[in-house]
Length: 274
Ligand code: FES
Image (cartoon, rainbow, N blue to C red; front, side, top):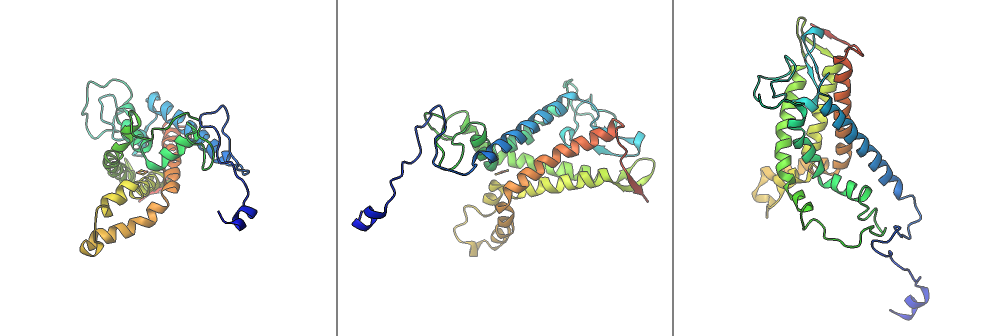
């Protein structure tokens, strides 16, 4: 260090004791607000989604109400116990509890292993670390090199499964134009299912694994012009992945909630038909 630097330097003690009873930091801003919001919203979502998956009713609006709307939590409805009209044909006979529990593992696995959500819940739930320049609440750090966090590496496979669900939910959105007894029409429910599918596609296509799948491992983009073009198209989406993660998470819950309100007769699904 030069004499000038020595004369002007401010002594700074960085960080604090890893794994201490508090989380020492020199930060003066309210860095914890983001973690509290994340913790609250994710906890609320998990609580609602668990209830909706176990309750096993009011997930489908059928011909009696001149609609064909299914909750995304229950689609595809593959078991014998699915309410009439909600499934493409009975496939599984041995599953007797809620059909949502059969498919939940895929969207749940996709979200749980998402790179963005990992950052969010490592910070807000595990305080590891709670934020940039805030001391880690745990005494040691092994990253994602050991079980169970090693399993986070299967994210790309959940991404593939997520694509299948996106196709199914997109089909559901188009099927929602069908109004049994009335013909073809459009309702608030149709719009909700369409927007839900759109946001889920935005979330999937902005995924880091998707971007890597399209443009990763290419040594010379000039030799792979198509992959380069796809990669360039996906990159702006990728930059907004956090936004799409939250929007699609909240809207998928809202879609289930809306279908539930209509199916239970609490509200009417306003719309028109041709
Ligand atoms: S990184 Fe978030 S879904 Fe893949």
